Amino acid sequence: MAAIVIIPARYGSTRFPGKPLCHLLGKPMIQHVYERVRDALLVSDVFIATDSTAIFSAVEGFGGKAVMTSAEHRSGTDRIAEAVTKLSEAGEIIVNVQGDEPLIRSEMVDAVIELMEDERAAIGTLAKRIRTPEEIEDPNVVKVVFNDEGFALYFSRSSIPHHRDLNYDDTFFYKHIGIYAYRKDVLLRFSRLAPTRLEEIEKLEQLRALEHGLTIKVGETRHETIGVDTVMDMERVEKCLSLSS
Image: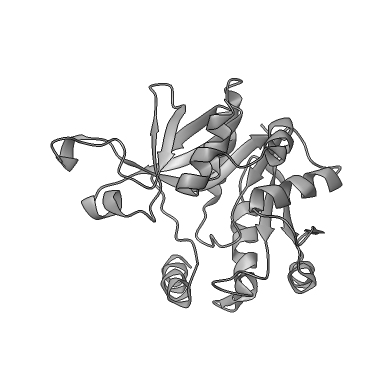
């Protein structure tokens, strides 16, 4: 199933301004993301959606494709939705890969696209098994529970499912990995929906989809990623990239 990937990248992050252009092993971070995504077998094209002329120029400089979007978007999902309306290449499946995930693997992109072969899935995403109590209790690690067919029941910053006996060894806990595949019409509809009650409580955009009855199919991955939010994250990621190069 062919798909395009759109990577949202804004310059004005409150915690880390200019983050997409920060260098890792001699390349801007956004280039690492672009090149890893481009290697996915099921991807027909890759675009970076940005509100920054500096990012736009950098992308063109390394041979990538960029789309200028509004600076007013409240989320990356809204940014890629605008980009889709400007791209004649946009097909049925749109994949959203975060621009601060330079450790993303092409296999993960293919895996989330394959989930959309299930016609019941409006959205696809990935999750990784959690092995430590520390991650289960960490509110910065988003957890997901899903049914026997892989459809998400809920996402939370809390430890779900709650194990009454606190026996972490025999219960399955999953960390949500923030890569999404959308059907094009679902993405455009989703971007027009107002934030919902649960979304605002948990600060998790995917809950808006569930509250509006959109099905999210979850696939398990064994791969880990590290999102870059701070300079310390950059240092961790650079070490990982050095080991894999």
